[in-house]
Amino acid sequence: MKKHIILTIIALCIFTACTVFNVSEETEVQENMLNNSTTTNNGTSESSAENPVSSRFSIEAEPLTAEEEAVFVSAIADLTVGLFKRSFAEKSDENTLVSPLSVLLALAMTANGAEGTTLEEMETVLGRGIALADLNQLLASYVSNLPSEDGSRLNIANSIWLYDDEGFVVQDDFLKINTEFYAAEIRNAPFNQDTVDEINDWVSRMTDEMITEILDEISPNSVMHLINAIAFDSAWEEPYKEHQVRKRDFTAFDGSVTETDFLHSTEYTYIETSNATGFLKSYIGGHYSFAALLPNENVRIEDFISDMTSESLMSALNSAHMYYDGVITQIPKFTFEYDLEMNGVLTTMGMPTAFSPSEADFSRLGSSARGNIFINRVLHKTFIEVDEHGTRAAAVTAVEMNDESEPEYKYVFLDRPFVFAIIDNATNLPVFVGALMEIPK
View 1 (cartoon, one colour):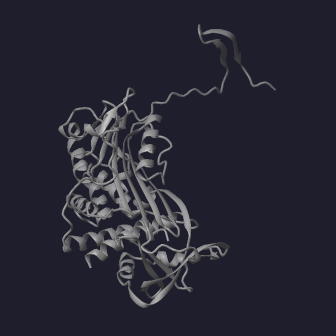
View 2 (view 1 turned 45 degrees about the horizontal axis):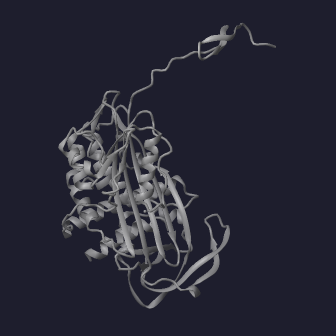
């Protein structure tokens, strides 16, 4: 039963589609991680060739007890359905794919810097009220014991990028907790375009190049980025043969019809609920499965998702059972990418304070001389490819922390007569000089 519940949570991440430390030697925590990075001349850090970045948690933790697992699974199921439903609602005319585990890991790292109402809201959304100290333990245990082996890989990596500025001070305990429980790699960086490139390179490597970019720029007010990356790559337990790949029509939500390749097979794990049927198809090694739920013909997909609860979803997945006569299945081959800024989703789920420049309390994270620290953006990007060989999927979640400093703008409105010049920059001598007294007719 325990194994089955763990498998269904991972299948759930896939179903929702169809989921170096180089800092100054200020603390013992930071010093202990310096061997994971090297420093370049411009102050940024790169992975050491001798110590390549690990893409698996290096934490060893005992598996969850039955009681812990039940509480954990129930809480994460709530988060999963909440994220999926609200993400779908944001782009209901597009394919949707979220990784609840990726979002959870990135935000749980962030929550370790929160206090007061900010922390309470994050604990409610992320773990249905599980105390953060307990959630850290549960996540470390859960993730550390997720299977990953030849032919069926699940790689998970976390990193925290710090703005290299004397006005921004990070709390030692914040870094210590996130390195101990999340194996987070820490990097100091100047937060310029080179840092954008470094972050995107890290993302690309940790997702086997399935996702090559999470940032296009860094906000001038950013002081920290907390990033999780997940890569899943597994062959089917029983790969499709050439004769099992056949053309047929797929009818989209708007009624349009497209001919595409479908994968035909007979499976033996069947799901049936009051409003849907489905099946499970195993990946090699038997650790992970592809789960599919097809709403009944009289049920619109929008209504099916809108009515979904964590209880109904977990009940459906847990009801999967052997059907010895066989289940004839057809899966379309598909590949797509998905991205969403999750500020609105997470706010409606119950953690608005974390996004408030004036009210957010991340005092346990650190402090900035420029102003209060808050979450500016939660960026989520995913990728999935399903074909006759198996499934590849990746997710990245980036939490961008800003301070509330406001630029001290100067204003010059040329809305009355003014002098102008064309000057020689070497000497600042005017080549032309004049005054505009009125707009020429």
